[in-house]
Image 1 (tube, rainbow, N blue to C red):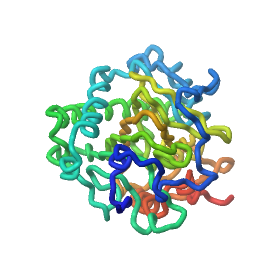
Image 2: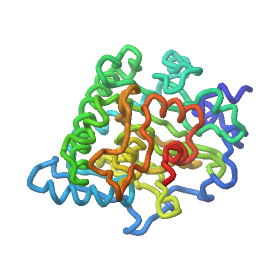
Image 3: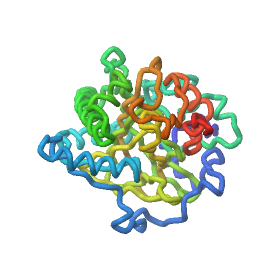
Image 4: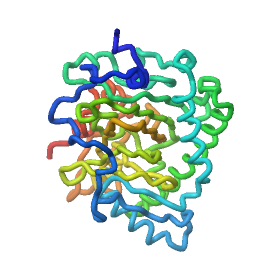
Amino acid sequence: MDFQMMRVQSLSEGGIAEVPAQYIQPPEERPPILDDLTVIDNSDEDNVPMIDVFGFASEQRDTVCKLIGDACAQWGAFHITNHGVPFDLLDQIRGVGLSFFKDCPVKDKLKYACDPNSPASQGYGSKMLRPEAEAETSTVLDWRDYFDHHSLPLSRRDPSRWPHFPSNYRQVVAHYSDELKLVAQKLLGLISESLGLPTSCIEDAVGEFYQNITISYYPACPQPHLTLGLQSHSDMGAITLLIQDHVGGLQIFKDSRWITVHPQSHAILVILADQMEIITNGKYRSAQHRAITNSSSPRLSVATFHDPAKTVKISPAFELTSNSSPPKYREVKYGDYVSSWYTKGPKGKRNIDALLINC
């Protein structure tokens, strides 16, 4: 059997007892041996900050900006509540995603397969890197299947490329896309203000959002201590908005250790990405994160990425640099950054670290 061509879900549901070699992480990258995710617990001070944005109401704006600034500086991630996205829409996007993976035959899923030779291709897939990155002996495959949707700008949105089952799939994804764009815009304004910048500063630097929605399905794994659902990385773009199901498995690297992000069913997890770190000149850092697997329960998450256009050049905000605080990162055209990421593979934060200016 050619495991390289198999979907991870098919491997898992086929009853294999051992993980194929392509999915085995090197010892230094493997998660601790755990029987069940429920044994993972963090103390209160280790929880990702939970911030009530009060519907982004102006009366509490100064307080919210302060909390967001602290979270961006210390974690690069935080949960938000009272964000205005209908709870039933959060449930619906998880529901249609789970139905696609669980209820549709593989032959039907494959009608929407990604182009295997093109990175970040829209559709149903299991691998995201360029062939030259996969050829590296150090590159291991993730224990994950996914469906990636090109959702914004509207010129990229082609619902005919999205599943037609369940029947409301396309409608739900389009509605979710529109709602999350509004949240991302409001968050960029708050993050700008938290740095003393004009409200529109970061959004102006990013430009029109190029939004992708990736529904990830992490099947149960017979040897979770050998695998990762998603290898350690920081996201490429500006800001990622993520929701999990009840299983959990996302971890953020902070203070030299991995901390589990417990699922919050109707909160949205905000993750700063690499271009945000560049724009803020390192005052706020992108969050290094990964996903672990477990042997008993599949897991689903929905990540909504908000990125610049590939032609946009990103550099530290002028207002945040001075003689005493010179630019820490070289200017980069976002398309070049994306190409490098998909060629080299994730490997923690090595991609953004390559842009650091040696002072």
